[in-house]
Length: 278
Image (cartoon, rainbow, N blue to C red; front, top):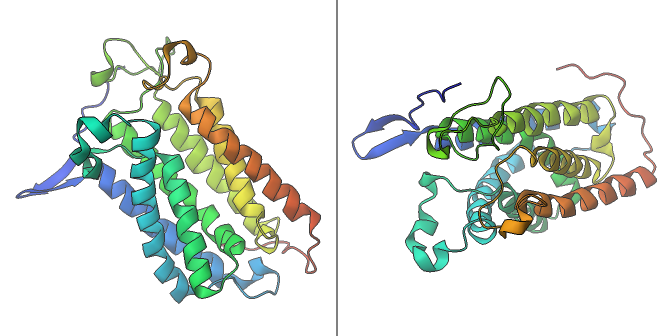
């Protein structure tokens, strides 16, 4: 299958180019913001407790998270995947419109943003993280679709019927691993977290949703590393053994499991809601 002839630029107005990559970030942040606000307004999800934040506070938090995603994602990409830019072309570090963002770096940036915001507003940082976590897969979905449109982060060579010949990856047909990740890290993880919030009442369990998100993302990412192209910066003899994505996801998996285990040990005084529509 030939790669669709996508133009990474949606349209241009003079020197200003609107790109699919940027639009994906905007859509993910805006939709995630509204989803988090919706969780606050469904008081039944909190088991009679007061939500961790108000809608107005989430409106302020979104700016912090946006900065965390952009700054953390770019720094993470440079440190984890392209450290050569530091000495080869340091100005390119600031050219985020060309792509090159790391999820793990963005994740750490968001964690820092949540901690600083919680401290400044005297809020429980873990509960605030529990509110943010269910919205994150929305951004992951759009981000992976944008990776596919850009023809980047392609998979390993394959003979499956849906293999795609990416223009920048040579003549071989490859796994569209970006779409696999959009389906698992985006759609499936979103519905897993939604089940936890709307059916299991996990917004009442401090740290549970943070942990579940970390477990889900790490497990899906590690499972898909076998079909993603190996990272160029890894030593050749390690490329078929372990990838940078796996190395960075293992700590997430362990911390996430600890958070869920810890939350399950703490009893919940109010019963979980039986059913919340919407």
